[in-house]
Image (cartoon, rainbow, N blue to C red):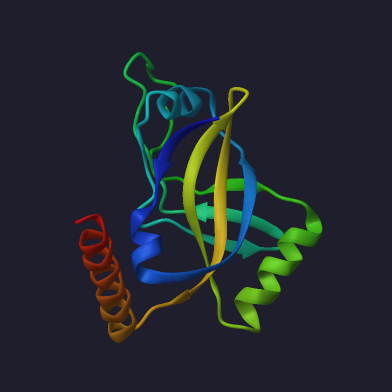
Length: 146
């Protein structure tokens, strides 16, 4: 398993709850660009329409050796999940107010997989509190090393 892209913004802006691994429907030149590491997940999110999950806002750069058959960089891509997983995600999104965000993309046996999660948004004071806890933890570790 090789990690292609991570969404660090998601860990900063959200409290991560449940995680899922989803396949993704790609065109020919998209998988070649993913193998080169030309993926950005920063502004991406997942929406559910008519019982199907789609990722929006994910940027996959164009493949340089591709010609006129190159793909659209920011098109909506379908995610491959089990029906019960989609229903669970939809329920969390509509009833409980969660957001579904991508956490990272990796390759497993040559296939692109997307790690997604249900997440609650952080307020500014939550972000400050997390940063404060991290800095305190670092200081404690430094003190124990000496």
